[in-house]
Image (cartoon, rainbow, N blue to C red; front, side):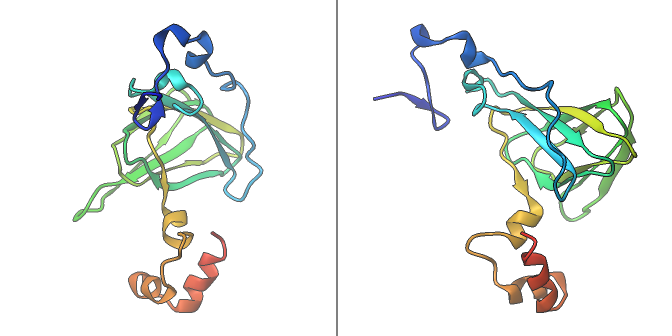
Length: 180
C-alpha cells in the first residue's frame, strides 16, 4: 500500500526523478480571452509532485487590459505577488468587524502580500497586457472564488436566503446565479 502525505502519494525515494521537481510553462502566456480577462497558470503540488510537504508553490497571472482575478481567498496560504509587466491594482479585505479594504496600484517590480485566508483580488489597470508571479506558502493553497462559492454552489444556496443576505430581490439573485 502506498504511503500518503497530505492526501497525496509519497514516492519511494529511490524512484524519485528530476521531473517530480520540474514544471515547464511559466514562460507561456495564459489565455485571457474569457469573461474576466485573466488566466492563472499554477505550479502547485498537482503540477510538481516534489512540492508535497515543502510548503511552497507559485503561479503565473496573466491579464488582458482591465482583466480581473476575481475576489477569492486561499484557506491554506499567504500569497506574495510580484508585477513583471504592466500596472496592477491589488487589494484585500481584513476580517470582521473592521472589514477594511487595503489596496494599492503596483508597477513593474513592485511586490504585495495577501495574508492567509483573506479575500483579495487583482486587476490590470492599464490598456496593455500585464503579468505577475505569485508565491504561496503552501504546496496546495486552495482557492475559494467568492462568486462561485456563493452563487454557484452545488447544491445551490436557496435564492431567498441570498436575497435576504444581500438585501436584493430574488430576481436579482436568480440573474446573478445564471452567470455561475
